Image (cartoon, rainbow, N blue to C red; front, top):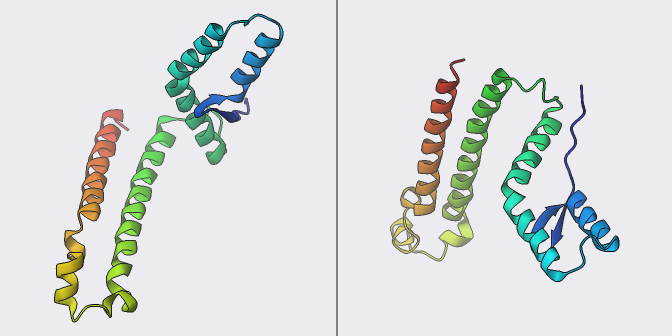
Length: 156
């Protein structure tokens, strides 16, 4: 069983690149394999094109590390369990958003500047109508449907 480790990334002027690629660039510059600015720019362009693939590999290796499993142990059953956990996590996040916004409506110091709840609702809007909360609930619903659909396609 091969131990998979996440790579280290460097911020190279706003562009995130795996450290091993930056070290290779520096080695190539020192050895004169790269000796023009055009070649350096081509390196950055190529790394920009590779970003999504590198990010996916990094996410996958991070997941294996967090779960303390190898790629051989990453089965469809494990993937299904992770997908189901992701729904729980997404719901927890949505609940946290609601609770955070609800604090504004329950805070006695905020409430004291209003004559009554009706005035507070007119100024702040009703908690139940908060567009940000509504958007997050809609996103949660769409995410749950998408994940459940994916699990169904896996035929487990």
